[in-house]
Image 1: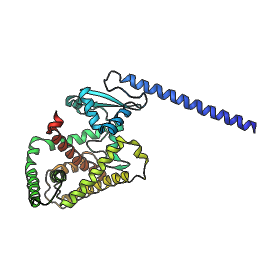
Image 2 (image 1 turned 60 degrees about the horizontal axis):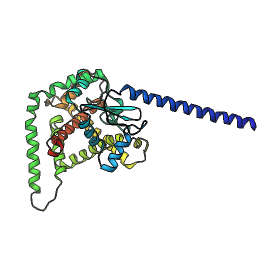
Image 3 (image 1 turned 180 degrees about the horizontal axis):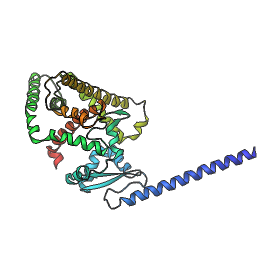
Image 4 (image 1 turned 90 degrees about the horizontal axis):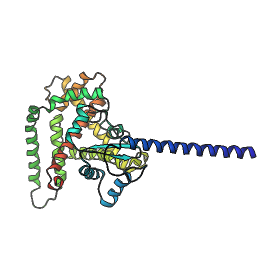
Length: 327
């Protein structure tokens, strides 16, 4: 019995020694990472190990600022770029368009797996996948970019004006039905619907009724909420019982179901010899020739990415027109 207690004491001491060594090694690694990027300015770290996490959390709970508002405030103070820390992981934030272009296009530096993986998958459910925005493979990304570059030529964008005008006419017609001085509507929801209608019609020549657009918008918003949640509360990745997490996963899944039906319908039209519009979806299908290993999941990634990019672009444009935001 005495030998057993001696052995147990030795094991406990060995485990404690290993934990202390691991702690020291991790501390040295964190110090090394801080030293390595010390030439880049940034907000002071509130904690050696947690980095800026506590300050971001404090601003969210006390001031009501989400992480994007906090980063925007720091961008003004530490332009044109700064670094923040989450444990041992640095995050470089760039607020200058020329530097962003140098990083993403000219030098084509590697993308951050920590951030982009959260756009690829929403709690394990594929969402943007390996689309043009979130593809981490440099070679395939360059191929996709070359394939899509003609789509954003000036003349192509001008060709989309009739679609935009048609969607605006539909929007005004819907508003006329509500103009009875009695019916209450949410203009925010109506603008979301006309935005989605424009994106889908321009990119995929897809027309939905109001109910279908509402469902699609709800699912897409749930998926985006899941991405935001994975940054703000990483612990939710380990909470499979959470109803909110399940809604986010389901939103991503149903969004991709719609994308799959869009791709399959267009492929049937091509097989039937029908006339195909030269829209974003036609460029998506060209990837099958440019990338031999491209399957339907990859095509769905691109369709969802086009919708994602369109919504982000329009939201950014609308925010930039706000006096409060610009000031």
